[in-house]
Length: 89
Image (cartoon, rainbow, N blue to C red; front, side, top):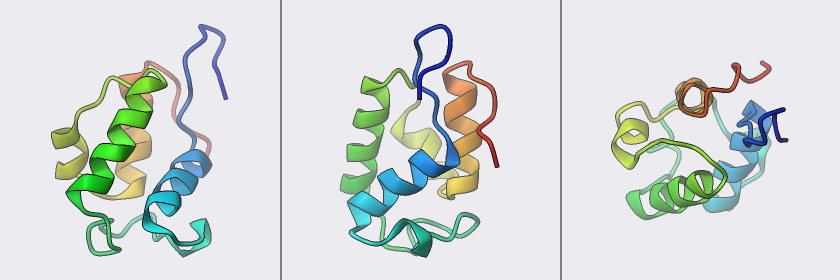
């Protein structure tokens, strides 16, 4: 989804799909309030996500996401970083 300024928005659904893709699981298996590290996310996969999201306009870094490794936190961080409104919950 693209907002009116042409920036990508980072909805909860999109982030769930992206994380599920790098973990090779179904999006429904992602616990949004649990550590993604405990769900199998490692630094290489996190860098893959960061690079893809940066390509879509996110102004976010690896460290910011690694410090708060839950999907709920990432929805907030990514939508703040792009200036978009918070993702629909």
